[in-house]
Image (cartoon, rainbow, N blue to C red; front, side):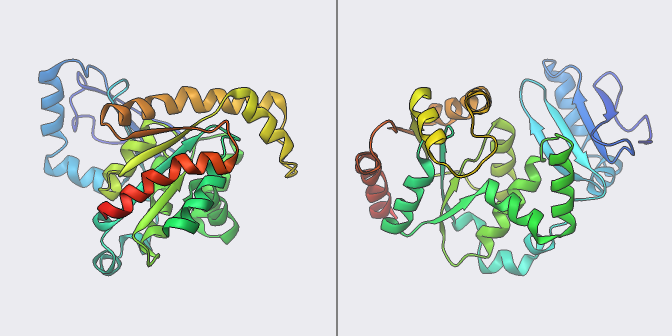
Length: 283
């Protein structure tokens, strides 16, 4: 991708194209993020008219901090006209939505518990994975892009997933949402909070032993080709490695609610129920 080399001081950034051979993704990585003066200088530079216009033509798709301090922009912009419609925003302000993130490893029982919470407390259940699959099935331009990225083994940009969640929330008459299996990592979390402006009420985390999760996943008999011991262990490791920072973040804010998921679903729900009963009273 070509761009004026002077628009950002080279001592602050290295800029490279990544993601596609035609340079449709631009990644900006701060080279010296520990330098406070350099960081402030960069922030000021990114607010200049030229830099603002340059980035306005692109769509922010990911953000990592503080370890890599990376910005990733997509060109052309991600298409999401329904979400960008200001009239829809006015009719159903995102800031009024109440969100609970539901996390747990594969086979931890979070889907079962979400169904019970919906039944007893009137929440709307949203699954990031289901929304991505539905978008692919729709045959839309964005669905084709998502399918292509998955086939190539690439991670779907956080903004894409967040805007699908946002679209589903805006189209709902409800204002209470369980978001299942999201955020998977710190990048997801940052993107969701920045794009929607929503901070979750709390995070419901189902702790379950790896042995119990293996038994449940293998016993589901849903015909999933990835439900074998090796892939289950891999999925569990990915969940721990990427999800642990998210749990730590919300724990530091006093928003993490841990539930023992090794028990029967009825017993688990008896531990879940008081959390939502208290939430309903507060609401």
